[in-house]
Picture 1: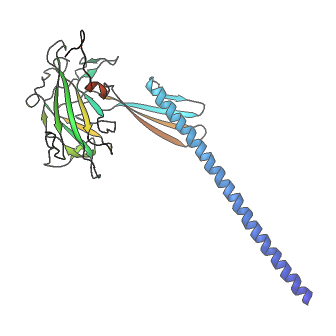
Picture 2: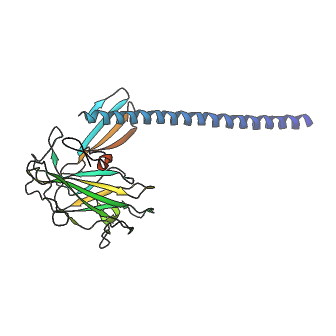
Picture 3: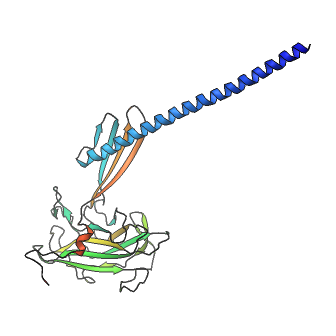
Length: 292
């Protein structure tokens, strides 16, 4: 009888040990399978991302679809400003001293400035908006708005007009922003601050362009410089009373890993080039040296 009891206890212990070992084994196998699945997904995601990157590179040279060893890509290229659009959020995030440009003249197929497509700006006023809405903005950013324009039909008499706005009311003789009405929204993005409507001709003396086919005389480009925001970058947007010309390209590329349904998307903003901001602080002579 005693032997039977001991045998039963031994069998129970053996069964418990086997159950524990089996549980541990299943856990290890399950974790291994999960790790393999995760690794496979990560590898597929990396290949899809590489295909999307390749799509961006190919799109820049004019190829919008293709198949690579790592997968496939599909890229689309659109204008940063839709045809007839009067709103534009400048893509770069601006720190103090940084600038971004809004062009008021069109471009030909080779990228040269011109108004052959009747797409040059002929309006009279603009409004600039800046600063992240609802964010803790310290220090408060100010803006300097420069309008470069030509005053003759040959484009040789180039001039610049400036306006400056500071919401913080510093002792810098800047104007204050427009604090009335609703918040400023540009291309569905809301900003913290806005200028009043800036009348290019009546307020700044900028020569108005009468014909959208003529590059000169008239405004060429608006340059927006952010000031004082040394700790936080901000975007800016522009509203106009007349359609803006194209401002560059918005490229979207979707990559798919070979043999998988994993996709990744990359978006690239390619605005038309502008002079680096350092050139705003130099003195240049078109003929001969400079003397004081």
